[in-house]
Amino acid sequence: MMLSNVGGFVCHIANTIIILYSIIFYPDSTATPTSAVVYLSVFAGNMLGLLVTASAGIIVNHMVRMLLQYNIRLLRLGRTQAYKWR
Image 1 (cartoon, rainbow, N blue to C red):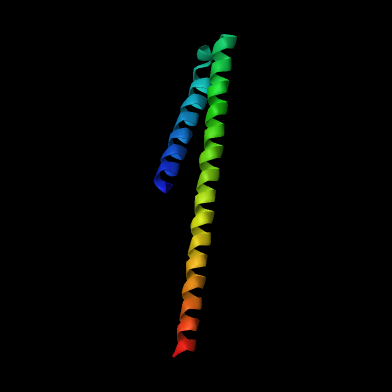
Image 2 (image 1 turned 120 degrees about the horizontal axis):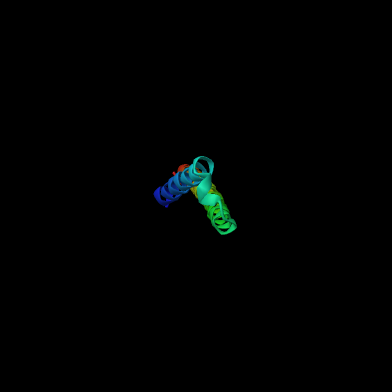
């Protein structure tokens, strides 16, 4: 899951850089209103993809952290219970 989030994030960053590069250095490509709308919609889609992959990474990190804390607490509880039974 983590690798797919990183892969998606990197692809969206690369695509955003390419789109911005073409808009800035090749203004002929956005000469017509239709092509400008297409460029802006693809750019907006990339921004949405970046938002989704970044938030998915945050959620995965949060869930792993919660699971790790739960397991550590469970192990500590198990040790104290084991000492009480001796």
